[in-house]
Length: 318
Ligand code: HEC
Image (cartoon, rainbow, N blue to C red; front, side, top):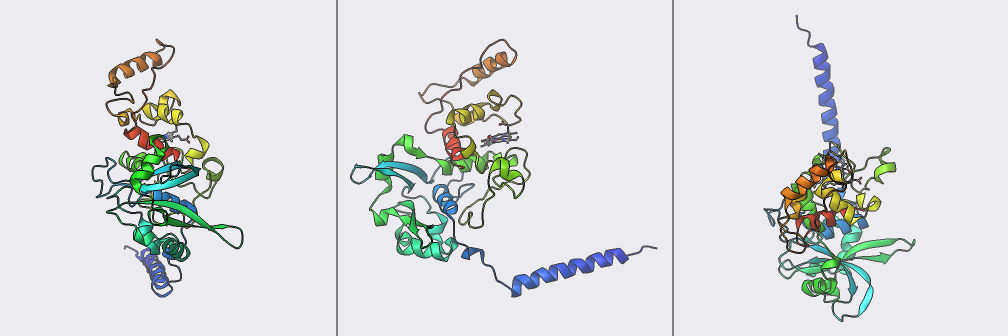
């Protein structure tokens, strides 16, 4: 005879647990995530990443179309006079606005109100583009309350002028870089989520509630096979190291299992010369076999290459 007793107990407990959790969900709505105020981290992240920084209908082939850039300004874009270094987030005309500007109720009440009243985010339009700042207001207890400022409304800055004032060397394509992170499947191995464990000591602090308002997609990753890189830019800020490591990780970590991403350089280097990948790999193999003393030089990437955008993204993870 088949005895169904254990099965029945399991089914009843399952029903009880499901019923209990549904009761809490339906009748005790005490907690609405949208009421959590966006932190400085969340505001910075959604401003540089933009509306969507993974697969997106505005950039279906993931070639970097319609993406904001982050710039560091050292001169005032209106007057050309030197000014204290200022980070601005530039949305050229046609770029979808950041989530918090399109849907301010996702910022949390306090941040929403400041961003609307002082930051004038309601005046930003996708068709004209806009320049945003991460601004703050001192609080009574000495802390700062951060909000989004639409500098196109408050200062009359337009995207073209700001990009010109910053110049290419002070422009970071982190939004497109994040799309490459999603496209290339870096998340198969890397997480962007240190946990509440010994992780703290190696990978840095876990994120806080409010650090994700407006972020899409979050790209946490799940099954970690490689270091967590949420804060990698804090422990390694070397562009050269990143360049060698992406071209061929074995140049800097001899036993690394990370694939090489040399194809993100594209066909030409920064001087417009064709990159001879076959020759490079042949020479690299000679080096591995001990027939050469040094590995071949890694070509400098072109300023509009995927490699540059990916490194801009990785170094922005602080
Ligand atoms: C097959 C798994 C795998 C994939 C896919 C992969 N990585 Fe890695 N990655 C590793 C491993 C393992 C390490 C540690 C050894 C090393 O440094 O190469 C690493 C190291 C790194 C580091 C240095 C981490 C530190 O703590 O200093 C960065 C940055 C990085 N990877 C970024 C990326 C990016 C960006 C991509 C996608 C373009 C990617 N990785 C794809 C496995 C992977």
